[in-house]
Image (cartoon, rainbow, N blue to C red; front, side, top):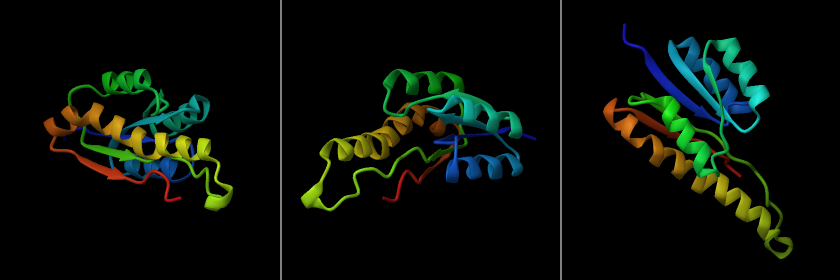
Length: 133
């Protein structure tokens, strides 16, 4: 049987952690990526996966993630994201908006671009979750 590899960003809690657990239960080898290494490390140990400290807004972290993934990736779950800057426009905190955009949009794009060669090799799939805020 061929090993199927998945990457889940934002795997340290919530939907990311649940996705990693489910994928492991379905037989994937899961690379769990998140900023909070202590939490993602615990999850990876629980499911027999690999933990990677990765801030999707940091190009060096994303490059390191791509190195760990290697030449073939079957599934990318872009889950890292945050719900900040939700106040009405009249009270907008544009720094928070910038943070949310950098994580939810640019971070997901950065990760996808970095892993695209491995996804292409495996005819892999990309799922975008990020934050629905």
